[in-house]
Length: 97
Image (tube, rainbow, N blue to C red; front, side):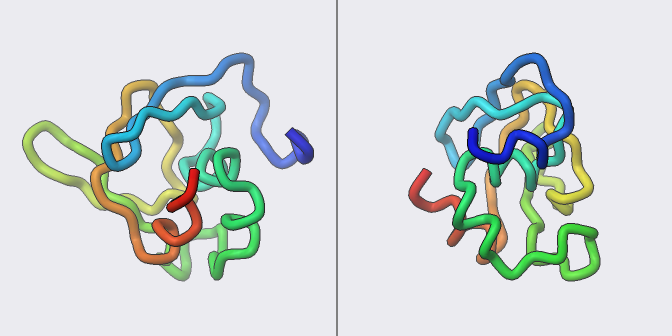
């Protein structure tokens, strides 16, 4: 990783699912940082405010039988999290991971 200082301290990677694809991302980090971990350049260059004001980083996670919309810059990753929909800005950034 070329910029490890941008991530919150972590000791291990946790597995999450993004649109049916399993990925390993650093624990203790926001979902947006995890997306950046997977697609450093694309997420770094995307039109995102990183503080929850723009809502461009919204994603939907599986919550039982329903979906729950969350702002990825303000949501901490959890092992086993299933992300079922992505905003256009996030989808474009992580499409090729």
